[in-house]
Amino acid sequence: MSFTPLASDFYGFESQLTETEREALAGLRHYLETEVKPLVNDHWDRAEFPREILPGFHRQPVFGMQWEETRPFENSAVYRGWAALELARVDASISTYVGVQNGLAMGAIAVTGSAEQRAEWLPKLASGELIGAFGLTEPLSGSDSAQGLRTVATRDGDEWVITGQKRWIGNATFSDVTIIWAKDAADGQVKGFIVPTSTPGYTATKIERKQALRIVQNADIVLDGVRVPESLRLANANSFRDTAAVLRLTRAEVAWAAVGVAVGAYEAALAYATERIQFGKPIAAHQLIQQHLANMMGNITASIAMCTRVSQMLDEGTQKDEHAALAKAFVTSRMRETVAWARETMGGNGIVLDYDVTRFFNDAEALYSYEGTREMNTLIVGRALTGKAAFV
Image: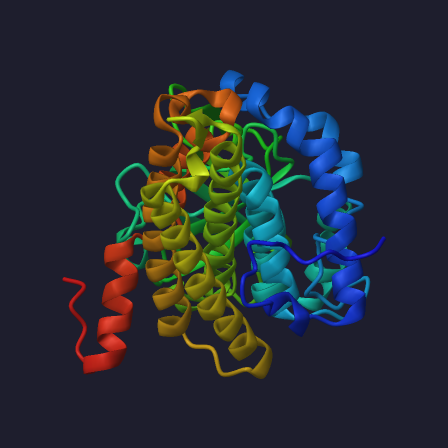
C-alpha cells in the first residue's frame, strides 16, 4: 500500500522512516481508518471495548515490534512512535490498549523476564492468543510506587503468596495474565510476577462512571492470597529500578500517543472549519480560527520534533529517564492546549460526540496523568538538572 504523508506532519518528519517502515505505517493507517474508526464513538459512548477487532488488530505491524522473539521486521523506536501516533490519532483508548499489551505487559516480560519466560509468553501476547495487563498502581499508591506499594509477596517453598490491591489497571477486565508488582516480605524490594487471572483469589472489577478513555476497561484488582509458582516470578525483576526500566521504554510512546490525540483533534477541527459557514463564509476564512489552527500546528510540530529525538536516543542507547520524562510532561501539556483550541474552534458542536473532538478532549485528561503525572515527570527532569531530588 502506498504511503501518503500526514498533512499534519508539517515539517515532514515521516520522511526519516525507512521504506519498509512507511509501508507498514500505511497499512496500519488504512486498517485503523476502515476497521476501527467507524466503531470508536459508539463504543466510547457505551464504555465498551470492541473485542471483535482483536484478531485482525493483532495482525497489524504494532505488536512485539521491538523484541527479538516477535519482531516481524527491522524497525526503529521512531517507527514505533509513529505507530503510537497513528493509533491515538484514531482513538486514544485503542492506543492505550496497545500500550498496555505491547509496552507494559510484554515489556515487563521482555525487560525483566528470563530467556525461557520471554520465549513462552511474548509470542502468545504478540499474537493476541493471550491478553495482558500491568498491575502497578494501587488505591493508595500512584506517584509514590517506588516506596509506597502495599501489595506483598511472601515466599512459601516453591510458591509465592500475593496479597493486596491494584487500581486503574487497563485491560484487566478481560486479561488472561496480569503482571503484578509487589514488595517481597523478606527484603522489602519490589518483585514482578506473571499472574494468570484464573488463579484462585484474583478478582477484577470494572471501574464505572469514567469520563476519559471510556473504551479502556480499567479495573480494581483484589489479590487475596493468590499463589503463583516461582517459575512465574520475573527472573530479573529485583527492585523498583527494574520496574522503572520498563516504564522508561513506554513513557516516550505515551508522549507520541499524546501527539496523536492532538493530531486527531486538529484534523477534526480543520475539517469542520472548512465546512461550517458563519457570516457568509467558512469559519476557516476568519482570522481567529486561523490563529487557533496555527497554534495547534505549532504544538503538534514541536511535539513531533521532541518525540522524534527522544526515540532516536532510545535507538542510540543514550535515552535516560529524564529525557523520556521531559517529553511526556511537555507533549501532554501541549496536547491539552491543542484539544482545547480544537474544541473552541467548533463552538457548541465541540461537545457533541459525533464530531470526535469531545472524545479527544476528554481522553487527553487521562494521558496527561498516566505513566507519570506532569509534576512527577517535572521532578525527574529537575533532579537531572540540579542533582537534587525533590520528591519528598
